[in-house]
Each structure stands twice: as C-alpha cells, then as structure tokens.
Length: 103
Image (cartoon, rainbow, N blue to C red; front, side):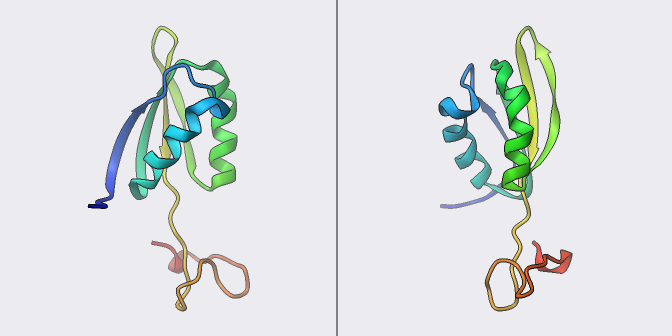
C-alpha cells in the first residue's frame, strides 16, 4: 500500500547531512503528499547550516528550525509540489512551470 500522508516526523539523531541523514530524509519526503509537512529532529549542528540549501536545490520548502531541547533542533520541511503538463511530462514544453501545472 502506497498511501501518502500529510504530516510525518523523523528523528535523524546526530547524523550529518552527507552521513546518513539524507538516506532517512528522502524516503520520508517521498512518503508525503505534495505540500505535506515533515518535522525532522536532529542533534547535528551542521544540519542547521546545510539543510536549507539542500531543500532549495531539491525544490522543497524549508520552513526553518527551532531548538526544542538541549541540543535538539526540530526542522520543518514542506514537500515540493509535483508539476506536469497535459502530455504527462514534468514541466511545460517551453521550460516554464505554471501554477496550473502543479498538484
């Protein structure tokens, strides 16, 4: 069953972005419906610096972080919307994305 969910939480412990964090993050984001929210707990200070850039590169919306306990940050990410054209391909034929193309 491949049911997509609207909200999910994930604890990545002390993993840095390139040291296993993304291996947990990508499947969690893939399990969310477009626009769904992911709350990620992390004890890695490097994630504070790197996650917003990774989200921007992957076209997810990084909503920021807050420290919820000693050394634990909660990062919030909204999954990107998937865009397609009438012929089923991603993006439009002129290379421009339009709001109407996105779900």
